[in-house]
Length: 533
Image (cartoon, rainbow, N blue to C red; front, side):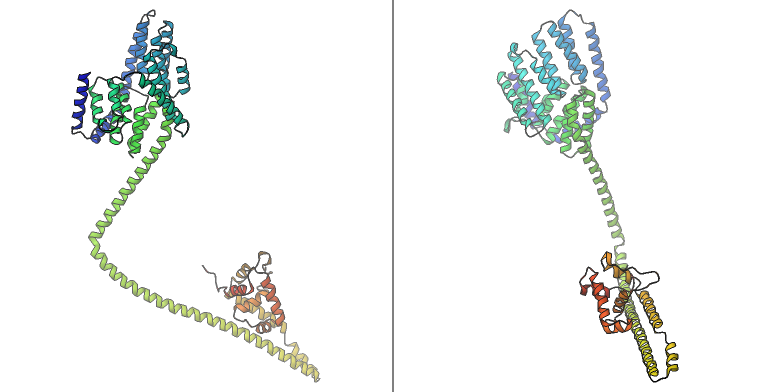
């Protein structure tokens, strides 16, 4: 024991002063793992050949002797336990049946423990509790009790991790811790257990991770044992230290064809936390394939929610890399072009600016001239319309004078002259012609007047023109107002209405609008010559 302690101390000191970098070791192991993943079929074939040899030996073993059969079944179970779940279950049942047949309590307990451990690892928690309940605890030795408590502790811890909730997980974790503490109080751990437990100590007693890397590789542990111990110790470290241990465990699992997937699953999780999405996807995909091969339903349930997150991260990384690549190329090209032709561009820009200023000044001058012409044209149209209306009004007044003269002739007895005069004057026809002319001229100037006017009225009060009708009397009043004839008397003279009649029409129309009277007339006056586009 003293020699072993001296060896561990020397190994620890040697590791502490060695020149290895944790990151370098982790990267090297990662390259080894990727290389070994390509040889997975080779390792599986080796495992199957070994199983085939054990089966042949078992078939040749004498049926009346317990030990040869049980030893071969134990070896076969050891090969199956982390390789094929269904075959491992069948082998465990054979071990239990054989132990019961020969009434071997110790081997019966070991068989039941192996069977229960298999159920725990595969997520069959209810069946695992049933298997624990079936054990004959009354005849346990101290060592049996110790192993039983550790097994039950592991079952509760697994359920706690599987539930991962705020209430039940704590309960299962507390029960598992209680069983673990009771087990640790029963027996003194061996040297390997003591060495592993040092990883979970605090302060200077905690060895560096390189110590465990060399300790696991330089002692006579099997690949499967190294994988289990490295996985366990990894919980005491973080970052590159944890990656190194988990990568080592994944390599050893792969080389021993372990399909239970725990180490590579944890490695995938850790890589995902460190934003190494491509590597994490490789591990998780392998873990899912192993879970499907082995039948580990709890591990598959843990992997499936994480895998889409890794894929999303991988897609985001690829998009980011592509975007950054294109941005880099664009920046490089822009800088290159600017450096080559900067002076030429500057000169051209100055010339172009001067030309643009001249063009802008010329355009502004032309626009001002055009606006002046448009305003002048508009004013001319309004004046012409006013002149036209005044002329028509005067014409009507002239007709009225003629009428009065004719009446005077009648009163003076000049009947024939009066009849001739009156017969030649069609006043109503002239007035209708005036309205038609007014309507046509106005609609020509304001083609959307009726539509715009109706938009100011309630839907049910809108004005609909009859066939052949251009404007109604109400529309004609507001048309004159839009042309600038706002005097009520003038409107009345033009349309042959009294002032009251004009007021009545206006009041009636304004009542049909949703706007206030002042706002309504303001909107009418704002109707444009043509469509605004």
